[in-house]
Image (cartoon, rainbow, N blue to C red; front, top):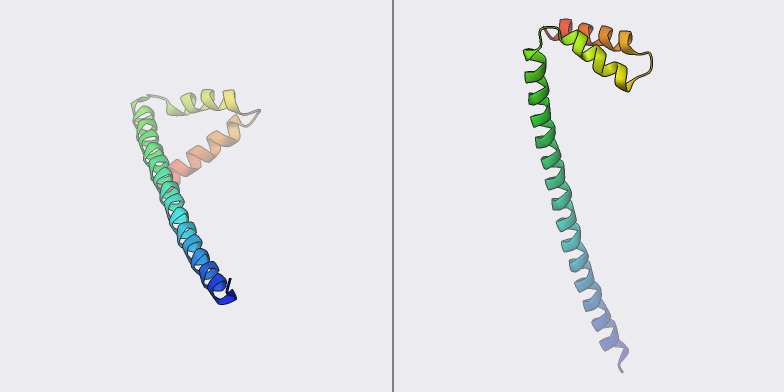
Length: 91
């Protein structure tokens, strides 16, 4: 075989592989973007549910404090202070 022919064929194969790689990469990037968007939408729904829940409570700090006790060790007061501080800042 002629080395020029082999080099040309090899160059063609490299180009095809590069195109295939770029196509696969773009598909993966689109899938990642779709997943991120779906997660953001899910988080948005959860946030709206949480806001609705907090607005329906007559004593939201007591509710938050009881939830915090389940998930943290001795940080109830600090978290409640932070929550009340942020509520004042946002108001």
